[in-house]
Amino acid sequence: MPLPPAPSKRASLLSPNAYNRKAADEPMDLALVRETLTPAAVSGAPIRSAEPESASAPSNARSKSRSRKTHSPEMPARLIAEDVSAKAVSRSEPMSEPVHTVTSIDEDSQASNPPRTSDPGKRPSPIASNRRAARSKSGTLGANRLFVLDTNVLLHDPTSLFRFEEHDIFLPMIVLEELDGHKKGMTEVARNGRQTSRTLDALVAQRGGDMTKGLKLSATGHQSAKGLLFFQTEPLDAQLPSSLPQGKADNQILGVVHALRGKYPKREVILVSKDINMRVKARALGLAAEDYENDKTLDDGELLYPGALALPQDFWTRQSKTIESWASGSHTFYRVSGPTVGQFYINQFVYFEAPGEPSLYARVTEIRDKTAVLKTLKDYTHLKNAVWGVTSRNREQNFALNLLMDPEIDFVTLAGTAGTGKTLMALASGLTQVLDDRRYTEIIMTRATVSVGEDIGFLPGTEEEKMGPWMGALDDNLEFLAKGDGGNAGEWGRAATNELVRSRVKIKSMNFMRGRTFMNKYVIIDEAQNLTPKQMKTLITRAGPGTKIICMGNLAQIDTPYLTEGSSGLTFAVDRFKGWPHGGHITLARGERSRLADFASEVL
Image (cartoon, rainbow, N blue to C red; front, top):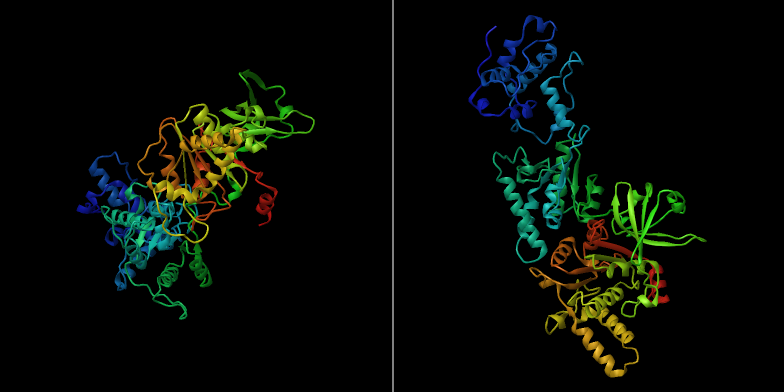
C-alpha cells in the first residue's frame, strides 16, 4: 500500500491543539480515504491503522500520525463509505452560501447524530469525541443557547457581553446603530455606550478573528466567557405582522430574533432586553425573551442578609457539655459548637429569648472550623449608656448602636423602614465620638439627590447651600439632639450647642467625591438605596485611615429609575461586606417614630 501524502504547508504550521479542536469540522480527504479502504473494510470489517502518537514524539512521526487520522480504527467501513458518498455529493452540488469550516452557529445540528463505534470497549473515533465535546460543554444537547442582546442591555452594563458563560451572543446591526447614537454626552448612558464600543473594537481586532465564524469572547482576557460573538453580516428575512412598524428599532430586533429562530431551529434563540414592553411583544409573537438579571445581587429582597439570627430553643441544652465561657472586662465570651455554627457570619448578632430562661444578646467575633466565639453586647437600653442622650428602644436598635460605637468596625450598613431611627442613631453616635471621644475630627454627611416628585430646578448658593433642601432629615435630627443635650441651659446655651454641633457637621455633594480621601472622618451616606453599585463603590473607596462609613436606607423607598431592590447599591454593599471582620449590618424592623407612621408603613 503506498504511503500517505506528506502534510501540507498549512498543516505544518498548525499546533496539535488545532487538530484536536477542529477535527470534527475539517473536510475529509477523499483520495486518502480511497487509499486506506481495503477489500476487508468494504466487506464490513473495521479498518485498522496506527495509533496517533503523543505530542512529545518526533516531528516526522507526528506528521505521519496526523495524516493517518482520517478515521478511527473502530469505525465501520459502511459508515465511512456513507460519509464519503455524502461529502462527494455535497461537493458536486453548487453552494448557495459559504460553508464555514470553523465553529458555526448551528453546531448542534452536526452533533445530533455522532457515528457509532463497532466496539464500545475500545477508544471512540476522534471525530465523534470532538462532536461530543462540543455538545457536553453544558452537559446536554443544545444547551449552548444563542442570546440576542438589545441595546439597553449594553448601555446598562458594558460588561454584559462576558456574563453569559459558555453561551453565544448575537448583535443585530440596528444595535450597533443605536450604540453610535448614544455615545455623545457626559451621562452614565453615554459613558457606558463608549465603553461598549471600545470592547467591541477590541473583540473585532483579535488576531485570527472572523465575524462570519464568530469571535471568541475570551480573547480580551475574560476567561469565564467561553462562547462566541456573532454580528449580523447579512440581511435576514423576517416575517413579522404588518401591524408592527418596520422602521422602529425594537421591531427590527424582533425580526432578527424571528429569522434566527427559523434559520437555526435546533438552537434556543433568546432575546435579552431591559425593556418590559419589548419582552411582552416578543412573547406575544411566540419568541423567547428574558430580562438581564446579572446585575441583580438578589432575586428577592426578602433574601437580604438581616444581620441577626435567633438561636434555637434547645441551644443551651445542646451546648451544656461543650460550652466554654470567660470574662474580659465588661464582656463575657462563649465558645460554642454544633450545627448552628454553620449559619454564623463574623459580626453577626445572635440572640436567645425564651420564657423562664435568661436572655442572651451577643455578636459573633470568631469562627474556626465548627466552633464560634460569641461576645456579649453593651446594653444601650439603659440610661447610663445613653449615646448623646439617646437610648435604644428595641433589640435591633441596641445591635445597631453596638456597631456604631465600636472603633473596630469601619463600615456599617443600616436598613429599615421609615421611622426606625437610622439617621438619629448614626448622628448621635457620630457626635459622641467626634465631640466627646475625639475619635474622629468631623462628621461628613451626603445623600443621593433623587427627588420624589418633579425636579424644582437649579438651586442658588454654595455647595452646602445647594444641599440644604436635601438635608431636612439632618436638620430635624440635629435640632432634636441639641435640644436634648442642652438640658435647662437656656436659650444662650442651646444656641451655643447648636453652633458647636453644626461646626462639626459638613454637608457634601456626591458629585464632587471623585478623587477625595477622607482621613479620620465619620461619613454618613443617607438614602443609600438610591445609589447604584458603581456609585456605592466610588463613595466607599474614599475612606482613608481612621475613617468610618455608615450607609443607611430603606429598600422599600427607591426613587431612582431602573433601580430595584435586587440591583440597589445598598443591597450590593450588604451582600459583599457580609462576614468581613471590620464591617457589620443590621436590619431595623420596628418603627419608633409614632403610631401614625408605623401604621402607615404597614397599610400603605
